[in-house]
Amino acid sequence: MRPRTYLLLTVLVINALVAALLGVSLVQSRAQYEASAAKTSQNLALVLESAISGTLATSNAVLASTAHEYLRQLTAPRFDLRALNRHIEAEFTQLSFNDSLRIAKADGSVAYGTGVDAETNISIRDRDYFIRLRDHPETSTIISQPVRGRLSGQWIVVLARRVSLPDGTFAGVVFTPITLERFSALFSSISIGARGVVTLRDAELGLVVSQPLASSAEIGSKRLSQTFLDLAKTGVSVGTYDAITVIDGVQRKFSFRKFENEPFYVFVGLAKDEYLAPWRSQVLELSGLMAIFSLSTFALSWLVYRANRQLLRQQAQLRQMAFIDGLTQVANRRRFDEMLPLEWRACRRDGVPLTLLMIDVDHFKQFNDRYGHHAGDECLRAVATTIKACLGRSHDLVARYGGEEFVCLLPDCDAKGAFAKAEELRLAVQALAITHEASATTPVVTISIGAAITTPVDDNHADALLELADAQLYRAKSSGRNRTCLSEDPAPQPARTP
Image (cartoon, rainbow, N blue to C red; front, side, top):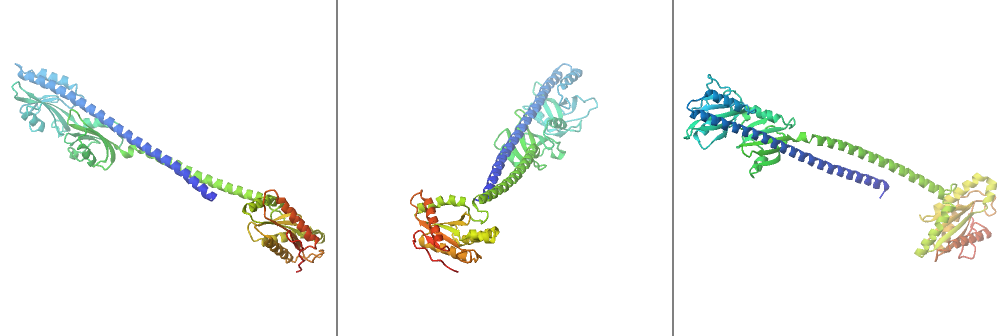
């Protein structure tokens, strides 16, 4: 795998892991916000149930006390109106939530109570709660559906108690109205957010009052989400669910409670977009940080990649400087000394021959003396380039051994191949036709080659191959130069002329 690809994959994996961790964290965080909203709505529903139940319980106690006093006056030898009014006023002080406390006679006329005087001419005989209490002696107390108050003109619910004479005869009704605005004020005192809702519904799930305050047309409405209706079918009295409100289309988390002793349900709904607003801010914040992290890691990885590539390039340059001859641009003596034992061991392992060619430029000192060192350098470069070009295999090595001497390592090359390659090199250099009038051999630059071939059998005689090749080079030079001498061939090769 290429380093750049590996680095890119590493950065992608790191970013994917960090993104996954952030994703898990955000999922857990959202679950916590959802749980917190559910707990809050449940607690608020419980608080409201307790507050309303307490008010209704107090109201029932006041109604019972007032009904008792009214019955006492009815059965007394003399009806004491002042005493009855004092009792009503005293009892009404306990009803901070209620609008009034009144008594209607058996004919339905409102005769006594707060806000009632001699000129009051109001009858409730057509009200459902009055009719039911009158016609059903077994019913002692009732809570009405929302109605318009005939004295106040406001929407109210009425708590009413039947008054019966000792013989069971219907004697009237004691009642106390509570305006729906009082419920709405109670609901608005709790923190439910700008789009939160609180609703109070009767036992038939008809709307009694809500916050925000419902319009008159909505009072009594039974429009509820299917989610709640399905939940209600199971018979549960307490629950939490998510639903889109039918009236305004807002998604909310609702908690509801069915009153234990009163015919009411209370619902508290928290708008999802409000209670999840902090979480969404967290998502944006973490997304921004993730984007910064990703950009930073990719930018850093690019810088690391560039720095590493530059380092590799510098290392390659240093390696070239360490193992390449600066003049001829072929391998240097150091590289040859490193490669000889390596190739020796490789050929020994594979059981193949190793050929070493020692090459010397004929009469090079005279060439330098005649044409100068600059021409000598150019001559060496030309010879090195030609030798390198003639070595067709990638694992063959040509190196400058020193001065005007070169060496070639030819793995897996037998005597026949070695001699043929040496002759190819010699003839290629001679074919360059570099003028050498100071040469005692030919008027052009030539080379002499000593070749040694062996199949390594141990790791300790690589230097012997070098010595053998050097001996063959000496033999070639002694025999007239411009020729190849092979370690297996005792007879020197005749000189070749161009």
